[in-house]
Length: 220
Image 1: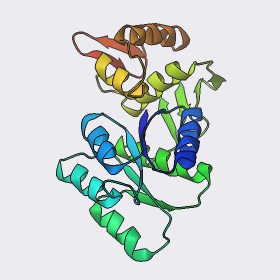
Image 2: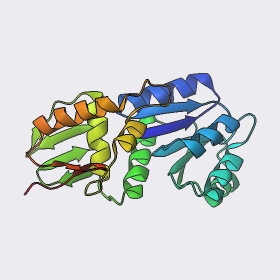
Image 3: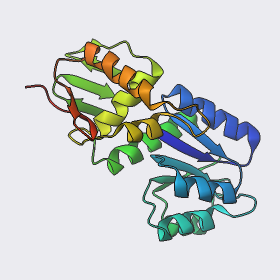
C-alpha cells in the first residue's frame, strides 16, 4: 500500500516517512501544496497524510482540488492548531480524519489502517481469506496460525491483494501501489514476488487472470 506524506517540516516529514516505511508502506513525500496537489492528482496513492499549513498552496485548497477532480483516496489531515473550526473546515473539504500535532506515531498508523480498511470495504484490523490471515497492525501474515516469512515487497504485494481480494489486480496496479514514485520500478519483479508468494500460500490462492493480472481467492 502506498502513502503520500505532505509535510513541509523536514524533520517531521522524515520521521513520518521512516515510520510508515517500517510499517510496510511505500511512501512518497511532498513538502509544498503545489507538488502535493500534482502527486495526489496523478499518482495512485492508497491514502494521504496532509499537513494544512503548507507553502505555495495550503492543505485545505489542495484537498478541495482533489475532491473536485474526483480523487477519493482517504485523507488524514495534520494540524498544529487545535481549534474546532479548522477541523470542521478540513472535514468539510473532504478529509476523512484528523490528528493534532504533536501526536504518537502509533495513533497515526492506527488511523491510517482504519481509513485504508474502510476504503476497501473491510471492518477489522485482521483481514482473512480462507486459511490466510493478515494482521495489519503487526504487518504479519499467517496460514492456519503459522507465521509466514515475507520480505517487505512480498508483504506489500500480499497486503494489496488482501485488501482487494476477489478482484482482478493488474501488474501495473501492483507496481504502482508497492513502490514509491522515485523507486526504479520493474513490472517483471511483480511476477517474481507472485511466484514466491505462491510457494508460501496454499495452492490456488493466487489465480492468474488472463489479460488482466492476478486475483486472491479462497482455495477450493
